[in-house]
Length: 287
Length: 266
Image 1: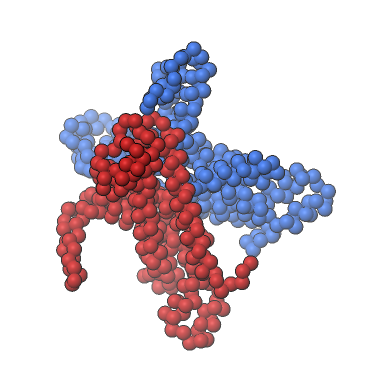
Image 2 (image 1 turned 180 degrees about the vertical axis):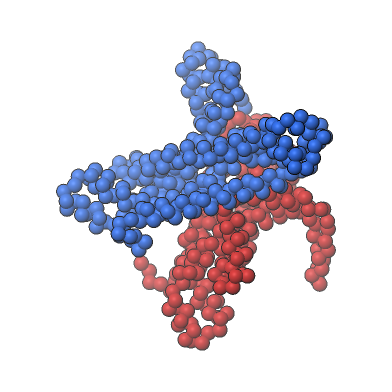
């Protein structure tokens, strides 16, 4: 980046560090922190949506919907999330390719599962084999996001289900007394009051979500863990910046990143709790 | 190979007994069930030992956190914040890298009646290294839960114990501790489930599986890679985890019943 970086072997001390920390690979490392944050914030709406749908399904009057809601929340919560990530990702990937295979190559006669191989025609590959690298990366990111949304949606559904149950019955009865329709009661009374009961659970879930992001690495996304291992590993003299095994130092940087994220989140949730407690009929509520 | 033979060959494969070579081609359903089940032994080993040691350590840390002396309170707070604020995955990495850097030494420990040689290279093995990480992790989370419960022990109970002239230890053993456990038990059950699920990360993150002796996820992943078919091994491991999670809930429910036995049934 700087001019004096042209020959790294000739410099040392502060100059060496300023060059070392501004290599292209290090910028990729810094950018991957952004990837993690993007994944976090982009997934939250889907988690809330799935959670809400799951909670409504469990409260539904239709029996099949209720069973579906219960099965979704209990199966996902009963299995370690890493297992579910691995499974959901491959299943989704193969499912998409299978559907594309049926529609795009109708006259393909060979079976898709040949012993231990999963073979679809080349037009059905997702993304296409000829697609540029960034499309592959984006697709991987999208799959990871879906996996996160499905797993954490189940936890959110459980929390929201409990929160919907926790709204005092008298509040809803008041709505009935005012002659509101069930829909109006839900939208104007039930839903706004649910949040204060859901928030402790949801903030917990956010903390768990933050701490699940390093699993991205296992799903093949080039995230901070990937770069920490890549950059920290021993570099022999062939490299411009040879050094020993610095992985421990890089991981300590990640540790600090996560601790900061947790600390900031805690402060934000404190404020949010105060906000939704306004006018609530609870111990923490203020009028 | 019939299924019975498979069970004999692979039933204890995860801890080093039986057939050395893993099935490579023509993998049967039975082989998947047996090997993944064999790997479950590791998950149970980690969960049971980490929870057992963590339970007592957490009681100590919770008391330190509640202490009015800064010299006890501050380290407890820092410990809880660092462990709870960082991903277990990163903790595994850091611990492994740190353990690898420790010089390989042997220590002789003399217990009087028995002499054990302790080697630092064991720390890089999952059975000890990962167990330490899981132990520290559950200790921090449990300490936080116990501390919250400790703060909710009714004041009147402690005043009553004082009035009866109980010593501080008696007071803790007979009044504070049982109440704390009773109040914390629901959350503690959750933590136990989380820890049990977290054991699946051990071989998957940093600790290498020695001689292909891994946990359930190690084998499930092995089969998924070999067969390109995730729809068999992952549901199998899911089934195992659901069964053992239910078992854990039943056991913790029994303890809960005992803790609450003096209360009127609802």
